[in-house]
Image (tube, rainbow, N blue to C red; front, side, top):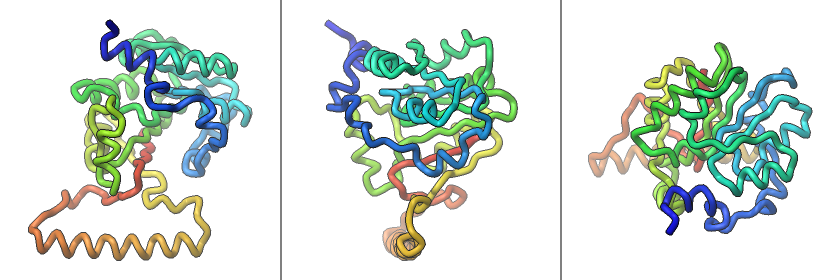
Amino acid sequence: MQTDAKIKESKYFSARNVDVSFYDLYKIPKYLLKVLPKNKEANILDIGCGLGQYLNEINKMGYTKTLGIDISDESIKACTEKGINVVKIEDVITFSKTITEKFDFITMSHVLEHVDKDKIIDTLIAIKTSLLKEGGAFVVMIPNGQSNTGGYWMYEDFTHSTLFTAGSIIYVLKSAGFEEINFLNPDGTDDMSFVKKFIIKTLLSWYRLKEDFWNMVTQSSFHKPSPRIYTFELKVLAR
């Protein structure tokens, strides 16, 4: 009988009813395009490359030194069939001990929430000290526990270990040694027209006021130093 770990490795995408065609219309989001290295020969790593949609697109853009890593046989097969340079790994910490050249730019999209909670900071330390070049950039994307669907995403994917808020992702990144931490597209309006952006920002201001009012009534609170971000996904650039 397969262990939980083996099921996660071998059947994750099929068990989630996701196949390669799910990403047929995938486009790199604007917030990520803005921070991609200008040098097309930059050494780029995608941690948890999944079915290869992101690496496939940046390869089309002319980036020549890209690598994807994943624990999933499904991922390795899908990426290999697309001609993507990919390596199957046991975990990030173990992989970090094997590399001979560090990376200029590292992405980790919807992976950190799958890492066992007691290994999250150690995983980020390995990225900061062993994988990322001095002055390089690390972009991490995770579901936002403070969004309206935060609780849903915690449990919709059975393999999630934890979710993050803006405050907790700052905490783990700082604990791992990252000093410069910036949220990308925090209100989710980067790709919107001026009119739609104005409407969304206005509604968000009203939403915060309503939230403040009910927090006062119910004697609830937030950790004031932490940003209040409500998009489904937190996108963070760290150095």
